[in-house]
Image (cartoon, rainbow, N blue to C red; front, side):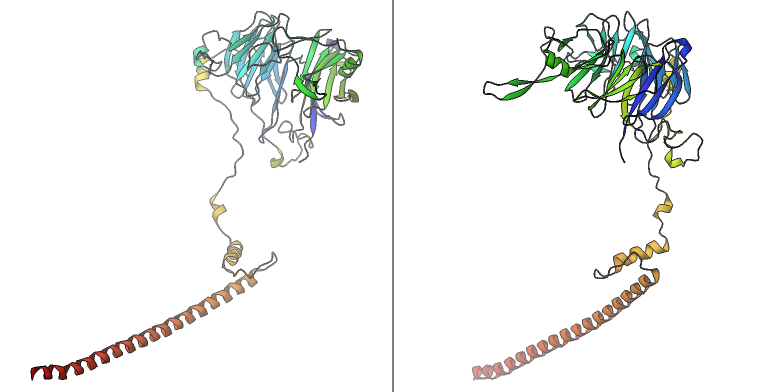
Length: 486
């Protein structure tokens, strides 16, 4: 199967008269629209999706900025307790978290819709939510410059102190405590890139203008930082150093802690040109492709620019969303079946075979208030992975298969059959083999009888000779006894 990368983007209207935006899937090579979902105006950090995997279709969630509604882009509208400013879904699509303007965070289970927890996490608006790659922790950033790490399940800190997770029953009536809090900065947050293993600030990068978007390379070689004025800075995390012997070596940039400040943009003019991309339009979204070779830039005018990262050359521009704002950009492998009942190569309602339609991961309506009874019942809709069913009929042989297998195991090694061999030929070979076996058994019986006859003859002859020797010895001893008496 040929793997093809695609671009997922979200747009929002610039004004109420412009209508509603959409969520679209584009081909990264041609810019062709593969699929589109209308009636959404999701803002930045208000889109979450789970890709299709394990023969199960994924889903897309989008929070609306002007109403307390969460759209599942397949068919469901979820009514929320209040408006959400950001959402996040864990990598497996099991849990969903949402932040509000009041600093509150809601935590749901996607399959059942159960509201596990809701708590006041920050003093001001929650601007960004992220799950760790393994889904064990939820990270929240706010306008109060705080970053908190919340344990999803129960965890143990190095000091042997148990931290209750968001799923523990003991935390349902208490305010959950964060696993750790990162406070090495003082400005409102727009995105999160942090090393949780050390729980401390490694390096500070200072830019000439405020940063609105970040994109991190999967190989951790570089990251891209964009400003609203249309400038994108490429920050290299490794650099070449000269040795005293005239050679070179590579070393990591930064890592000295709070005192380590790297000022971006103060290099020489030639070095700055190599690391700066000028788009010329306000930038609203940023993303690096799966291969780490392309940079995708979304603008306030609805354009999506695709740059080659090594050369900073503009490869192509997707112009399908002019008049709207690009609020979200992401890349993924093109799914074989985008949303279960709609195949990318088939239209809705077409006569597609059932084997070409993959089931969709279930999304239930989210609870607006916590309910202990529902939590105890915990009814969850799960889709088991496809398994091969073994029936009794699979163990039964039909006549042709039985004769073919019998011929394979019964025929001598020198005889080979071709795929075109018919049943009559196989039957005749089997009969010939059975006749040959009968003849061999008959000959074996004759050989056994001859062997027995020969054995009996030799034994009888040996016995007669032994008896004759004994009689001769008895006649010789008789005269000797008579002479001894005289």
